[in-house]
Image: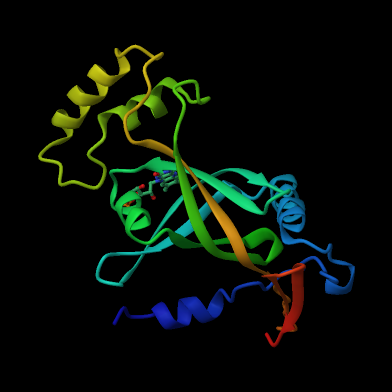
Length: 213
Ligand SMILES: Cc1cc2nc3c(=O)[nH]c(=O)nc-3n(C[C@H](O)[C@H](O)[C@H](O)COP(=O)(O)O)c2cc1C
């Protein structure tokens, strides 16, 4: 137990500020457009790293795993959430074994959470994918999440990768798309009158349901 932690948390309650209203009756018929509207709202409100999301996967033992990564695009026509990762990383191997995931994002300034679940597809990233030299070098180094003996070992590998021909594709670098079956929008309220709206993919489009908060 950490002395005073409970009191410090109570002194800083979450969502104790004015938050936007969300009228589910005015929500669009499909979720991806609403997600983009909320994401743009978070960017406009100055939420730092508003495109950083949590991706949860399942490992070979059926146990959950999660990490944050950068959301790269949203396909509003087919309700696809796009991210990039190394196929040879733990998450890449987990997605190969069980190609399904949950994505979660919370934008504190707006008190808004979105939860997305569905199947995941993968295609090898083209060499021309728009990336900074540093990001490209970090991917080329590879071995993500393996134990590292020293910082110097990484620095040497990173410098060598920076010198590599940028026209060559990065092995393992992969564009993943999470195809949503379910998307839930959660609007927090400082008085705890939260609003939840869940979209589920049905045979003829999206079903919308209000959920008890
Ligand atoms: C702000 C932030 C952005 C990140 N973006 C990515 C990303 O776009 N792709 C990625 O593979 N890892 C990204 N990471 C690193 C992951 O969180 C994770 O540490 C790494 O991918 C290894 O995960 P794994 O062992 O589950 O495969 C990011 C981390 C942070 C803190």
